[in-house]
Length: 160
Image (cartoon, rainbow, N blue to C red; front, side, top):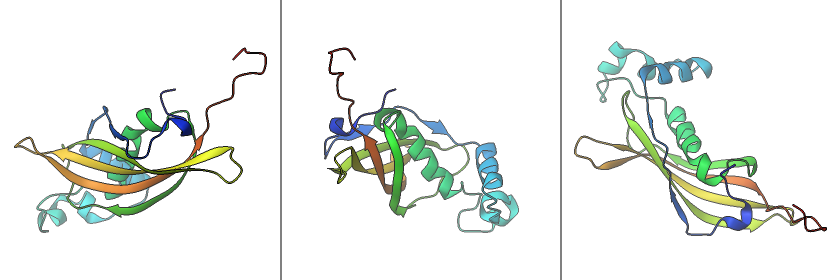
C-alpha cells in the first residue's frame, strides 16, 4: 500500500505522479469497445481525417480514467473507501495515439465525515502530454473527490 490516509493529506499539497503511459491505438480501440462507444472520431481514420483534427482522437473518458489510474499510487492506493465524484471535467486539448500522458494532483479540500470515522478529500487532477518542443500541454483536468480511510488506531495493548 502506498496511498495516504486522510490525516496525511494537506490542502495545497501537490503530487507530481511518477507513472506515465503512452496511449496506443489498441488502448483506445479496447476502451471504446468495452464502453460501447462507437464514435467514428475515435475509431474511423477516414472520418477523423476529414475533421479539424486530421486523425483519430483518443476517447476523452479513457484520458480521464488514465489520469486517475496514474494518480493512485501516491494518493489513494489501499486507503480509499470510494470515489465520490468527478466534477468540472474539461478536455482543453486532444490526445492522439502515441501521446504519453502524465498527471499532477493538488489537494484542494479535506474534511472529516459527520461521524468522524473517515474523511473526504478533493483533489484537482491535471493530465498533460509532452509535445515535440518538450513543452507539456494540458489535455484533461477535473476535480476528484474520494472517501478516505483514517489512519488505524494503535491496538490498546500497544501491539499493532
